[in-house]
Image 1 (cartoon, rainbow, N blue to C red):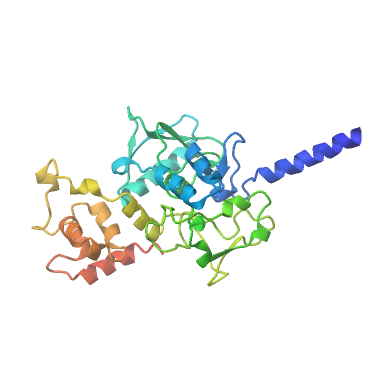
Image 2 (image 1 turned 180 degrees about the vertical axis):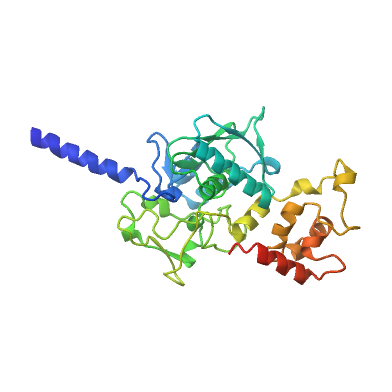
Length: 333
């Protein structure tokens, strides 16, 4: 009887160890975080909601595609009301504020403190770091728990809340990377599944090995060996947990375009078109938009009106000279 009890105890311990993966570094990726057992989490940090659960269970690929594509919702006009829960640590609050400033500085997504809005994002200090995909409706949890208090980690989780999946789960990922299934921790194989062409995080952009949303080479590894490798170069580093990369910004601008800029300014004296003086209206953002290849040319009428200096449309400077200046100042790889 004692031997039977001992065997049951050992088996239970082994199962528990396999099911919960604890962080092994001070700045581990979200896929290496632990979480509460009552929260259903996939891919390490994606909180499963009912629409996503139905998509996961759909056996037919078309059914799965329809469920996902119809249910992932954006935030209207790119405005995200948010609230900071009292459970957050000081370090987490600091990281959240830094991340929000980065969104304001480099994208057109706007975060506003929650007042009476029905849909809003609540940052909580739960176990680990996780977020649902897209706008869920009502109060929406985003966890920044212990070990997650870094700008890059918060940027990553907010990207999920804005509707973006992991880069490695794109339908075309097998053209670019190899999954080394034999090195993956047992029970974590589902974190490496790919989805169909319904994926919204690519928005026509090429596969991005360096994306903030890409797993690193050794994510969920059971033996310290690579679980993901580039087909072209097995030694290439994958992903990053520090900051946006160029394609991340492009995806954000396509998914949340600067529509609000097209509205007629309330104060014409302060926000009038700068064409006569050849100045940027939005000085904090124009230089970043101008640094991305093709933006000044692709959206010429818009950029010429609001960002003429950064794009080099002033009579005294050539476009190529101005673009080269901004590229040098904002080389984000």
